Image 1 (cartoon, rainbow, N blue to C red):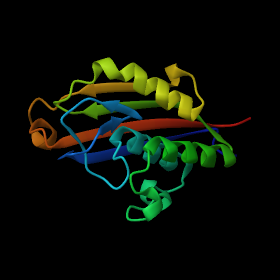
Image 2: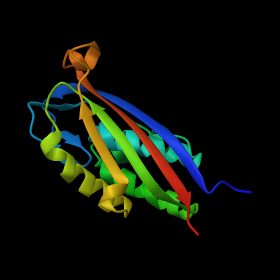
Image 3: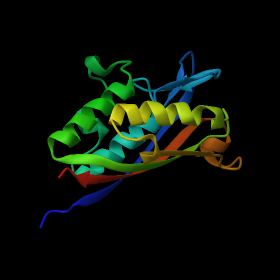
Length: 162
């Protein structure tokens, strides 16, 4: 009997970089630095993509959207998430829920979380309560504590479309 539900884990890290916009969950966050990467470097959306692909047994973000390919240069990660959602739907899956944690000392993200949840849930064609985002610090420890970048963890549950 085929599984009715599957769980995937996603993780992403990006360095801060001057001269770039900071985008998380498809939302531009006012900050003096953005994240370094081939696409828009949206670490939150990247972690979600990896969690969803992992749950479906479809590899990872690099397999589907390889860095260095010109068509992905500067692309909105929300567009990539929409493509992944279409892949899942085509394979008979839908998002059950997503839970994420963003680790960064700065910027403070609490006032942007609802907008991120809205953007992500609309892209995934789910209810907003199916997408959860938490933000925390690393208490000054490690690369995030030194303000060098952002780390994100994501867990996704997908369910068979019946």
